[in-house]
Length: 561
Image (tube, rainbow, N blue to C red; front, side, top):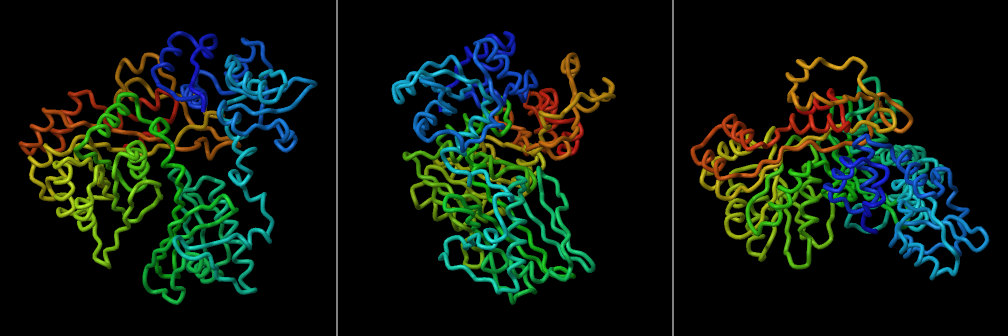
């Protein structure tokens, strides 16, 4: 993907905006346009219109383009992916290219040399261009929706348990409608961007809910007399024992939608009073490939994380409740470290996302393979980087700290509410204070907040008073030129929100902090020291997202209490 050319924005942004854009160290124009839209300087559409007007180029909305009408003769996949452009049509001897950057000469020159046609640019939005290129060259299976399938295709979607053979349990003729219904539900969850699916039986009803952007939404209510058959079908897909209904079971599903696309699910069943509840977690490997810039770290927080990852030894701890994005933060760090020069091993329960080039171990307590046991084995395997899914006990903590003290970089998670409480939690586990002070290099506490929809968010009609905002955590300086936004709701979002953004407290262990730990300071003392070192807590980091127009006051209040 071509590097960003900041000259493109010199005539459409003011000097302050240009300088802030320059400091972001963005890699391409997709990230740049998304950043500009997130800052509410200009929408992508308005930005493209301004660029096209200034450089006297036509502009076009790719959402109105039927990709099938593009002649195959003008498609050049390698050149399109190299320059992030898409040939649209020929007019005489002129080839028209969709582009984000109409001042880039290299793409025009390469296409002119390859095709023999003259080349002219048409300006388009970066996000829509990327999706159009993916759909045209990678196939429509990358962007499937329910409308792309009829019932016969839905019934024949291939299901296979991970690491097992491809032989499928063929449904009975009577169960064919159940098969179609379940497949529709699963595809609908993928389409809506759900993270979890809940199938819940009750005495007089049955409820199916999706967790979207962190909140559960009721999607369907099939007849209660189907509850047994729905649970049985899900258990068959997961390779679980359909005869065992008294004990919880765990399994996995690989839903093979097409030859090129498959989705993994983690499945958990639980016997309840009125039948088996089934919860499915969608394991999205693309979330681990987002890159650190997409996670929502502020520039100084990102630098602290990257600095800690660059150290040859020490311990990085990521903390927060279940569903706060800890796994994605860890996997993002592992992706940065994943080079041929490093030996990386992970112990996870469960292994959620498969990463090429990393040795991932699935914890199996029944077989005697615990976190502590896996860690001991890792240390005999010449590791450079070790990731422990979670530190749950003193044994695991002591081995992890020993590894961090003996030349290894260790990444792990803990379930605590803040960075300061993480240190006291280790003390309460029984880890000596001098070991904590000498081994832990960085602690990241995090939450996920829903992101306001850029299409419909609106300024608050009756904003809180200055005294209320000061009580919330704003500083007087932040109140001078702040515009607060609230959700509205439109066709592009869910009740005014679309997607989520990370809220972080990134706390390096300074010499003063280490000294405080050595004297067994409590969480309040550690948090006070962090404030003296200008480390933003979760509320303060959330307020920065509110000021940027990324999320709302109510959402920050919800996730940071």
